[in-house]
Image (cartoon, rainbow, N blue to C red; front, side, top):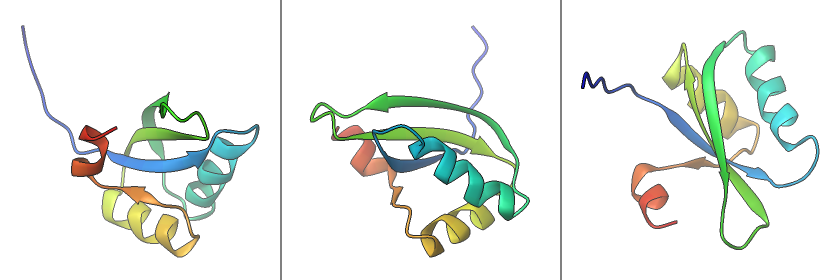
Length: 80
């Protein structure tokens, strides 16, 4: 097996229609491309965690946090 590590960004998204579109709109407005993403819903079912690979990790974190979107840190992901 070949293995590669990449830095990714995780954000909390309300589990409702349009929740992901809101996050992607913030990134698009900042000119930050998303290379790929995957999602899972927390056991409580009220929000989703989206993990994404973006071209500008630091820039994405700044614009998302400025827009009030919660960035989830690695230690918190492992506790879900």
